[in-house]
Image 1: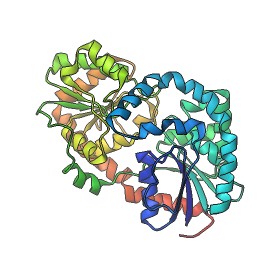
Image 2: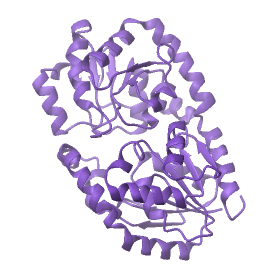
Image 3: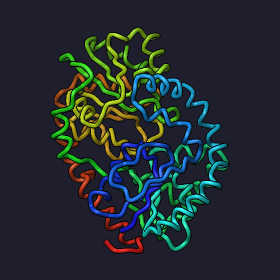
Image 4: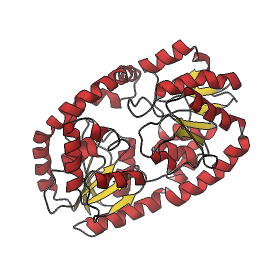
Length: 399
């Protein structure tokens, strides 16, 4: 099948999704909304940097210099986001013309945009007669669609144009219908990265070399980075002194926050440097090794879909303590597979972490339960098999 994807070509989630189609021999094309190196195995690669994507070039590089640049960018992202909600949509028309020309050249059997802003908004220009699949990621509808009048209008237009809808949370399918996706069109719920590769996690986690050797103390990992409007990392840092009152040896590890100015400010002002490590970006093997060594995974989410890091942590036996929002409740049953907390309250988050550290039996039982959940609901092969069937239902060609 000839497939054209519209995605952030730097994103590990997008790359995981693309990998399946390349490996299974489909003619795979990518229009990336951010400059990056071409992923391997593509039939063609194109850059259409809508919404000023070209300005983010340095953020994909993990060198020390760019890490500090990312920290500065992260500090002001909360201020820049409202501006992007207004100016980003205005950047679309010329790129939509380029995109239509690209579609005419490739003549794909199916176009798939891997999130709504701004990939789906760009792909909404797909000519009638070519099926368009749109994925909803994380905050597409709960946050970004409400960012401005233009964002709302383009979100509705995108969902009205879509022939199929994929989300990583059932909540977003329901919201998608409210935002204009036709109720008689097909939908699918699978993890945003296509699922969890359990065999690779088991093999790679044993070989992942961490930036430094870790002591034998309770380890809490928060790998979500700075996501203003989505995560309350300020609350997370404020919870650390409360946890240390009960577990003074606990160690909090936060990739990829090395060089992040805001995070450094919180750690300095709270006096928790001795118990907090702001690590750089980790590759997947390193992250899986860290999850296997840590006792608790934390995600202080106030807006979110289903984080791939949550599923990976569950697969590695790391106990989840996450924000009590609808998408998290689809995976975490309190007291069985993890704990749900008020992500706006340092006390609530600290109590959740403390409860996990105080109760090894709970964590052991959750480890077994989460292994079952991931195997049944998030295994990569089965999820991508469902996706292939979904594409086939919509596509113009045959597998």
